[in-house]
Image 1 (tube, rainbow, N blue to C red):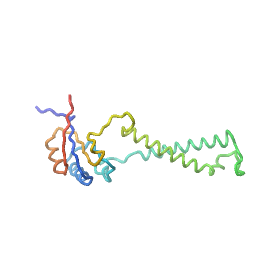
Image 2 (cartoon, rainbow, N blue to C red):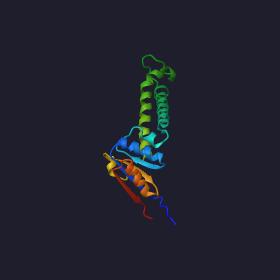
Image 3 (cartoon, rainbow, N blue to C red):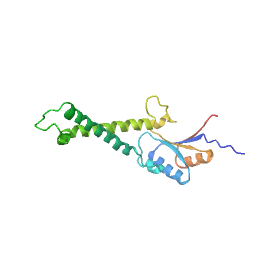
Image 4 (cartoon, helix red, strand yellow):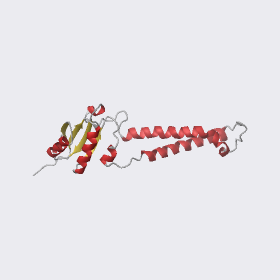
Length: 178
């Protein structure tokens, strides 16, 4: 009778990003399901090597930018046409459409402002990097110069061998306490 400990995590520490990408390709070809990869900087091609789908943050950027643009259109209409119409440069003040070019720069700036700031906030919340969030990084060396692969498995010895063969400089196991 064998017991499967699904909460066993195996970590492999790498020294180079090229070795990491090569190891990921090798491990995925052997059917290893990689749960997470921790890196000190963005690694080109890592998302493709892991088989991750395209992120939807660009779709959110469009929605956030559109929200900023609509808010600025309403704001300029309210301030310059409805609330306090003024004769600026001889332009008529009864129509927002005839004055839209005068508002082009603030509308562009608010579009970029909303897209950038709301994307940043969304990213931080999605990744759990907001103040008070629990740290998820299993090895602090990955914030300096090391790369880490995390795999959940019950076949620890086989994984250790595969990690060492793929160029890992250190392999560790963390078992959950039940």
